[in-house]
Image (tube, rainbow, N blue to C red):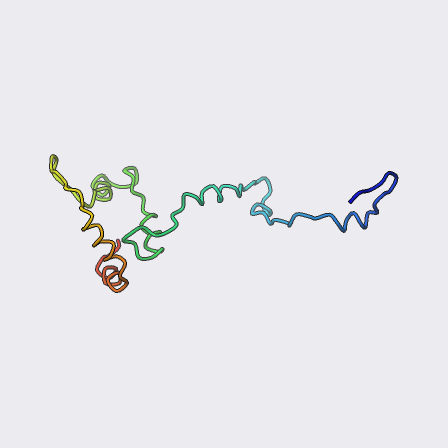
Length: 127
């Protein structure tokens, strides 16, 4: 809108066209001398898993598994070895043949069927 020289806009009209930002309720509103950064949540969200890893049935089991500390500082040495032990152990020097494409396609078809997925989830037990 073009305004000529000497024309003043009234306060009432000026308020009418001003847009105010929506009020944001801060987490640290009730705390004095505390500033809670709300940007950290946005930054950390990209590192959160979008789906559950294979072999985990529900979110409760997954969070329980993550809540256990696995470090050598919090667990005895024998328990730590069992926690970080790989599921598949091969002897040194053993040649592992790669999967062929036929076996890979069979695995994909097998995992797509819903009825087999249910049977597998019943057979596989999550710690």
